[in-house]
Length: 327
Image (tube, rainbow, N blue to C red; front, side):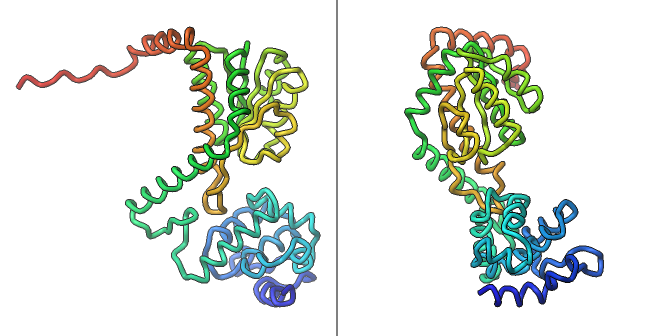
């Protein structure tokens, strides 16, 4: 198997001892003739790769079917690199590990073999009509919500709800799309009269975490479970004695070691062409809504007046309804 893939790889890219990747006429690396998102990603990330990482990236883009059949050792041997380089390349391309990269390569190979139009998500082609896009996305979102609800540990959820309801202060950490979810949770808690802050700046997050202690809560939102800028403030809060909660798609990820309560979100629809910012956000928001609703139930005596007060305070900012015409 390795020899077969090596023949394909050498023909398109060049042997490992040529001193780096072969360039096309425009000076860019050759990653195979097929125009697909993986090849485009390799071209985009090429300037940030080492020469050995680029060889791995070019290999998987040139022959996804062959590389999907290889172990991490086999791909390292094929490209004349090391297993560590293969794993680093997989992560740079957006995959948590080599296993995830192999699964994506198998899917890309199937797409090329079938001759389907290029995809923008797992099952939406570039030439799909907008009606089909709406239907397919709606189906995917529904499945993501169902998967998250089925996998959510209600014991952990109830414990997290109680901690938030009793908290003197809650800090929520998130970066990128997860940062938007963190803001949503903090804003919801503020609406029912609780003290809550969302932090997307890692320096500010750590500074705030130092001030937490027993009676406070820290919540980390990270789909990968490995975002260092989210894990660091959670670790500080954990060590200071605060109750810690992780909302993550990887309950076995590094974030879990600093979380008293882990709330798992669905990863079933995550693919190379469907970014984490899409499917993970849907499942994260469901967990946030569950937390908010549970806290509101437990603090209803104070939450209901707080919601009413905030609604009235913002009433003047809403456009008045147009008067019905008398003509």
